[in-house]
Amino acid sequence: LLTAFLLLSIDAYAEEPKSVLYNWTKHCKKCHGEDGVATKIGARMKSPENIYDAMKEKSIEEIFESIRDGKKKMPSFKKKLTEQEMRELAIHIEYSSLVKSVLDKRGRVEKELNDIRNDYKILPECENGL
Image (cartoon, rainbow, N blue to C red; front, side, top):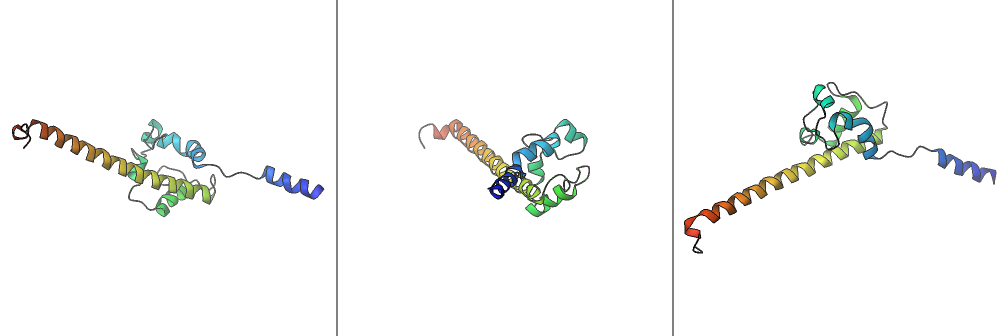
């Protein structure tokens, strides 16, 4: 019975892995903002205007190395985060960069389609259904 209690106690006191959102909020948001856009502090430290734009051509490994080792004025996080937490942040940044790229492209395509629709409406030869 004592052994069972001790085993259950160990699990209760084991440190649970922190979520990407928790780590982003605690370690990244101050400079890179909630949505990846540099804050005033980030701008003063010469952080990229948008971290997702800046990292869109980088591999997960390159992003991981920046988090682990630091880059320019950004400090190293190897003493504050586990390797798994740094990798999860790198994956989050890479994924968010990809999503932002797709959404940006979608916005450009929608604008082009609207421009074409507007041009089509004003063409005189199209008014009669030609």
